[in-house]
Length: 111
Length: 111
Image (cartoon, rainbow over all chains, first blue to last red; front, side, top):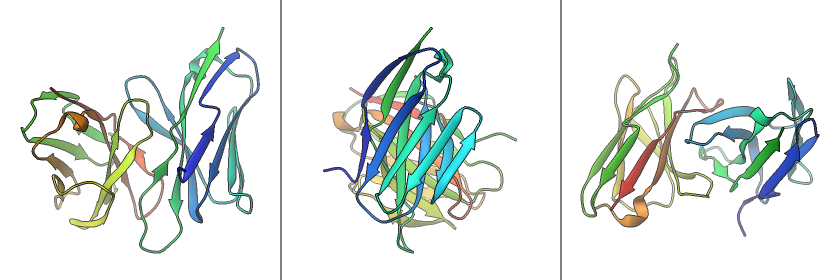
């Protein structure tokens, strides 16, 4: 079992829909990242969070440390939101610096 | 301010050859991490460099080596290339454990 699991693997939505992508992890963490990857490879960091909730525009990220679970929400989705969304965690421990990634969720938003 | 840059963008090599990939971090960043992303998978951590030293390494063979220069730029070297080394190689920079900023990646094809 991977340390970081995402669901769903693929998601198709109509423009305007509310979208939720889930991430579960099995280790203690110091931080969780949500990343966006467009075709061609470039990765953009959306959020880094260790507790609670963060909001940026139409994107909202939440984390429940006790349940080892995070969600990424997109309100009023738009075709330009189509991308792969990746969850990554940094395990807790002073000498650990690496990020462990989920396999990603491919989001397609149709007009 | 230029973000993280990587060169080359694409590269085709033959099995058994050696390759060097380059990364220039975002201004003000002192830490560089390298990741390998196979098609359809999340990135896998290769290693991280800080203060010109390899600070942490993932589960990659010794054929993968790196270097960080005094100006914080970094190189990833892969010797004795295998077909399975074909992937997108991502560089990410950060400042002391803060948010990692990713470069556009180098797509390596081994034939």
